[in-house]
Image (cartoon, rainbow, N blue to C red):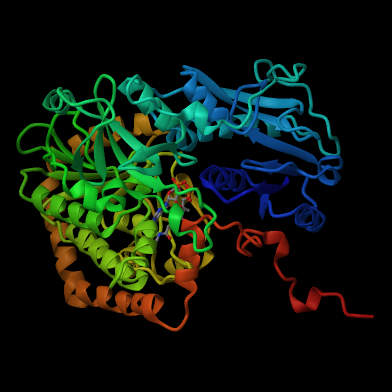
Length: 599
Ligand code: COA
């Protein structure tokens, strides 16, 4: 089929469907939803059998849905309608939810249901996390079911296989956009559970409007305080700010306390021309001066499960066949200079541990998305600093962390991707000996989308050693997302182990324990060390780094501002003015010979 993906942005769900549909042999092109005339033009050019809208904020024009089957993915059960479907579901504390694929008509979410798929709501997960995992997985199922009902040349679907349809006769219930009033936290009354649920339901966008040190701001990225921390501050009052740790500040609730990792200052001028008031940053960065007066509650890498921090290290298995497991759960997978240095230091400490295999597990939702573009943007406004200097420091810190993995030759290293990885985050993973993912993972192993950034993280060493020079160049040029199975097929990943993140974790550990106790481990490590020595003799890692950084230096400080412009657009979510050509295949220029000659 010819399928046009019509979407507000090429987000993770759209990328997953893009990979899936291409894998199934469909011809897929993408048009970002910019204006009705642009959509009409795209449909006229591509002549799709079907338009699929995974993420829309506006209606599809009647001129399109009246002639072509247009299917909309709604993150709600059949009958649910409205723009805050997941937010309301979380505030209501639903245990089960679903994704519906329905036909576009004049009204929002009101067309015939072609298919839907249910899922269990993961307790304590944030809205974005549920969107990236459960919603995306259910959307894959529902879209495939809906496509099975497509009849060429017809607007109506074929009869549904039993159990695949929802209630299409009911017009459903409209739930309005959730307001800040519905989200407001009452610190004197709300329990930790309620506070966490409110912040989780607003994760990603729009955050919960609150006040910290007299400054209105939106709260994101909240975690419960452990019983030890709660006891330490038992005498404090609800709403009080108590301590700091990494990016987060600790705030007292009615019955405990929560760590608040990220905030977006809100002075009522969100539309300020340079967008400077709306950057989401670590709470301890936005309120650096105020937070400095709070006690720092540092947490060791190895600690009780209920003690939150960005990094955690655990060990499994007996002496002599032991697996080390390092989680680095950085918000949105973005790694600032501070976070890269923490990871580097953690890796240096982990080296001293008696393990045979080290698993780099990244975060649950993102393995890593490379350098922290919000943090870099914020440096523009710091006297004596600049985005170029901050980019330079950040990429060097990222390289330092990557180098620790590349030079860890006395044990097997495994990058286990529980979540997606983008740009430098992909190449951090490739520094490991083995790179595994589950079927739901989407990779963006390229940098060019960020204003033609050249990239570093030793990619010029780690990518060709896996895929060869020509394939590496093609991958970097193409700039398309890859599903994990596609990445395995081209040799970018070593294996795709499970259907989802939960099963993946168990399988990774089981495999690593087997590897750690294998009789040929010593021989395997000898081969690894010899290979590293040969590679170093051939060309030292320092040379790869220097060459990459020479190009990056030009990106940061050179005449061409593309990277700075692209970053600015990315962090402030500037609307797209056109669909990039590598996605809008229908807009590819025809070769000269096939272009009709003017009369
Ligand atoms: N720095 C800072 N924030 C980042 C980030 C980065 N490198 N990568 C992603 N984010 C943030 C986004 O701003 C967004 O924030 P939100 O919570 O306000 O919504 C969130 O992570 C999710 O990103 P989004 O783009 O919505 O996710 P996605 O899954 O649809 O797309 C990527 C994933 C990787 C394709 C996309 O995020 C991306 O291109 N990131 C930039 C990668 C990059 O160029 N890194 C720098 C070079 S190493």
